[in-house]
Image: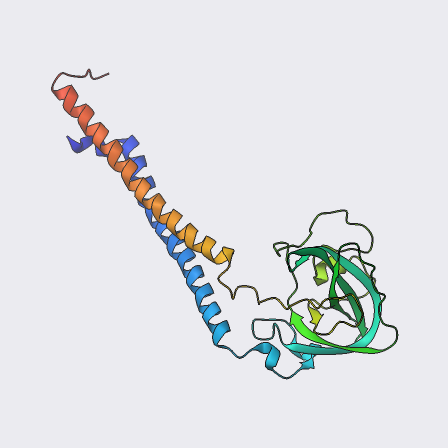
Length: 251
C-alpha cells in the first residue's frame, strides 16, 4: 500500500520536508540564542557599576563607544563651529528638538554635543563663543531605527534626522566623531538636559521579544510541515483503499 512513497512526487515531498525541518529548527534555535544573549547582556548591564559614576575621561580615550564606555562621562575642549537641530524628539511626553552643537577639538575633528532639549516653537539659543570645555555622557551613534528619530529626506537647512558621523559628514566640511555627548548641565536658559540612552542590545526591548516571537514561529513551521505531510499521506492511503474497494476509479 505504501509503494506510492517511492514515486517521484513523493520523493520530492519527502526530500523537501526532510530539508525544511532541520532548517526551521536551526533558525528557531538561532533566534532563541539571540534572545538569550540579550537577556545575558541585560543582566550584565544591571550588575555592572553605573557608568555615570565612573571618573570622567577625555572623549578620545573612550572611543570607539561600546557597552562598557557608553554612558561614561567624557570631556572635550574646543570651539563650536556649527549648530543643528534634531527635530521630533520627545521628552516627558512633549515634542521638541535636540540642540546639537559641533565642537571642533584640537584634533581637527568635531564632537557632536547635545546641548539640551528645546520645546517646539522656542527660540534656539546661540552657541557659546570662544574656547569651551564640555562634559557629559558619551553615546553611540544613532541608527535609522532609533525611537523618535526623524529619518525623512529633505529636512530644512540646519536640521539633521539622526546623530551619527555618517549623517553629519555631508553637512559640515570637516571630520566628525562617530559618537556624541549629551551634557549634564545645559549652558543656556530654556534648554533641558537630555538623559543618556542605554547601550544598544543591552535591554529587554521590543527587538528582544521579537527574537523570542520568531523562535516560536519557526517551531510552528515545523509542526505545520509535519501536519501537512501526515495529511497528504493519510489522503493518499485513503484514496488507495477506496480504489481497492471499488469506491473510487483509478482516474
